[in-house]
Image (cartoon, rainbow, N blue to C red; front, side):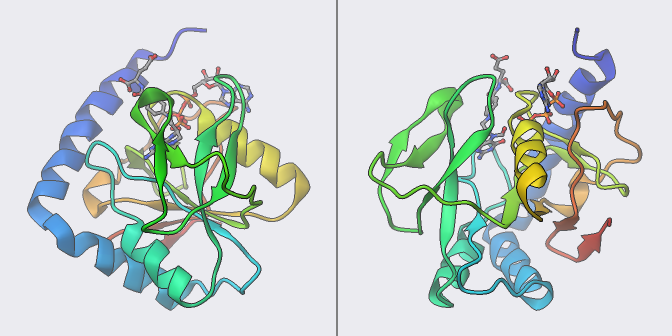
Length: 191
Ligand SMILES: Nc1nc2c(c(=O)[nH]1)N(C=O)[C@@H](CNc1ccc(C(=O)N[C@@H](CCC(=O)O)C(=O)O)cc1)CN2
Ligand SMILES: Nc1ncnc2c1ncn2[C@@H]1O[C@H](COP(=O)(O)OP(=O)(O)OP(=O)(O)O)[C@@H](O)[C@H]1O
């Protein structure tokens, strides 16, 4: 099935909004988001938190990953294991080596240990007040959250600039919903 036209136009529009917000807020946003996350979520040691390596003006989760690591919480990054599949997660902390992955991503080394995360920090282009999420269109997080949610409770926490909030994103049956979003200003809970 073709990608709905409105999703494509929204991707272009929110790529621009995210770029402007990143330029405006600079390096202050990542630490502000880390502080807000830690004020609302308290992962237990043993509950791994998955983040991502920021690309193309995405909100920066590295200050948060570093803070979690200091508290003794295991942190991980995704690896694209199959184009049509779910992401795999592998142990990684700021400073650990990275290798080039598909689509311009950077991934943990092949020696990193496999991790099953309970909290996922999710990258996005846009979110809405129902927890709807727009990504790059690969469907990776939709498939990953659907698969993980069959097995155990997961918290999917979007990380975004407040300027990435959309009115009403188009929603398709396969779209996985976010539990919360952390911006530089607030934490929003959706379910
Ligand atoms: N930082 C980060 N890491 C991530 C994601 C992400 O959104 N952000 N992903 C989230 O899923 C996965 C990677 N998925 C991606 C999917 C598509 C493109 C991409 O550049 N797509 C092209 C179109 C390519 C095509 O049509 O073949 C584009 O948007 O121009 C990038 C990453 C896993 N790692
Ligand atoms: N649970 C699923 N099972 C099989 N295919 C899926 C599933 N979820 C998504 N897809 C596929 O992924 C495609 C892209 O989905 P969508 O446009 O919602 O991506 P996205 O959420 O914006 O991207 P991403 O999650 O990679 O950031 C869909 O058209 C569909 O073919």
